[in-house]
Amino acid sequence: MKTKTVAKKTAARNTPAARPFTYKNRTLHCDQVPLTTLADQYGTPLYIYSASQISQRFQLFQQAFDARPHSVCYAVKANSSLAILRLLGRQGAGFDIVSGGELERVRRAHKPALKKVVFSGVGKQAWEIDTALKSNILQFNVESEQELDLLAARAQALKTRARFALRVNPDVFAETHPYISTGLSEHKFGIAITQARAIYRRAARSRWLEPYGVSVHIGSQIRKVDPFAAALERVTSLVAELRRDGRDIRTIDAGGGLGIDYSDAPFDAPHQVDRYAAALAKGLANETAHLLLEPGRFLVAQAGALLTRVLVVKKNGTKTFIITDAAMNDLIRPALYHAHHEIVPVRQPSSKSTITADIVGPVCESGDFFARDRAIASVKPGDLVALLDAGAYGLSLSSNYNSRPRPAEVLVEGEKVTLARRRETMRDLLAPERLN
Ligand code: LLP
Image (cartoon, rainbow, N blue to C red):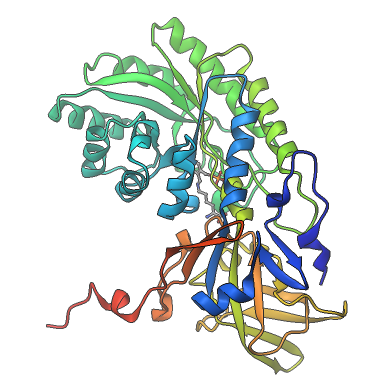
């Protein structure tokens, strides 16, 4: 196990928060707080987030796009904890939402941010559109002609005008897991860019619709930045055509998707954001519309870890299994995408010797694994281990499968710890059910 991973050299502009999980006195800490203390106080499994790292990542985005009018609209789905939404909202973030539920979260976390909300999603319902219209959100990212008709009807019913962008599908390939790639014509997302102009023309005839922007999102966990440039280039030429048609296009929404490194290789976040900003600038050329950005993972993934306790270490035939109290219901990324998460012991081992094991949860599925045939420090029942880079699409993708209560969440800032979500109880789990 390469324990140097969590205490690596910091790159330019990196502060200690660049890697919030580091060993101090041979114990893994988040900022200044030992994970052993958090386990004692809050139990396991436990999601732990570094507030300073989230703020730092947000500020990196702000700085990288400083030169042009822009808004960073954090993609709520990555981690929809109210505490994180409030943290970002207070720093001036807008939000990218995909449901009425996420809209309600923004309202509860930081109401003033409602005016900086963009509403994405391929299947919006009338009640969700109504709530968003009443909340006077910034824009609807519309993904079909049918949705545009529904939006016009709802705006008419509420006697208001809906600002919209068409989410265009640029037919650009971006290398990522097929489940999270969205920018090809074979995907369900967006409207073919070739059809967009005619749809804007039709929409402009409705007094209930205000053509306001163009949006694009080509997928998630994208490491090479060229596809972002290619997609925006196509969007920018569409915007020029729309302007010639007389549409007053104010915003270009570049979506999210910037990837991180889940391995233990050094990760230079400022450099990655700068490369991304340069790629977008290339795609935008002389275009000066207000740029909207929807990063999710990049802001929160590396700020978070899932802390779990080893329950059992057992051998079946030639294989060793480390069974933890966290499972696929708590963090489904390895099961769903074969995603890699570094797994490190909380007590830094004194020797470099490792065992090769599968690290798995107690759920009754063979797909319930965090890592297979992984070299890991020898651990025993009762030891704590941390799954790193789990701040994005961790708890937000969790479930109660096997009737397992969801973990608690804490936000750490320096030495301060705040409970962001208490552990679910049996009562929470059973509350909606009825026995007649
Ligand atoms: N904007 C839209 C319209 C999106 O659909 C998404 C993510 C984002 C922004 C944020 O993308 P990000 O910056 O986080 O890459 N569950 C998967 C990722 C699904 C992404 C879905 N859409 C995972 O765990 O890898």
